[in-house]
Length: 154
Image (cartoon, rainbow, N blue to C red):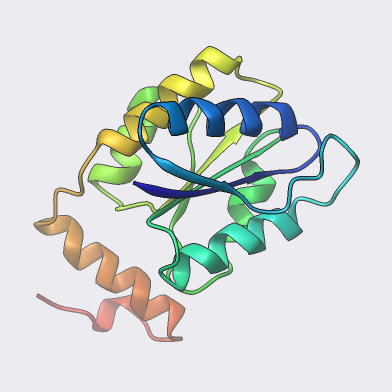
């Protein structure tokens, strides 16, 4: 899988370690905008990864900041991005199977490196279920286009 990764200063070490692990497992990984532990504002790496995923240059994005929340909020401003914060493997799996999330956001402060890696593994191996969930994604797309999601029907 072709994966774009990035982090702010609080997640810099974690994202580099995760990128190396995923590359060893056969994924193509690219860290976009590594701040190398220097202070940087999370909207910038979130934008870089989310934009690259939305443009189709990468299949998946992974972002790490202090809580994962700021990255998620910023990444979700990009049309076509469904960024989910996951603090465990079940949330990561459901974000993919039910929401077809294409960007995973995690916390550097609340999760250890091993758990970060397990959450990413769960996210990457899970497929979108489709079915009733597809209608819900069409409703999300309607919102992105300024439409009422209630106007979307099967």
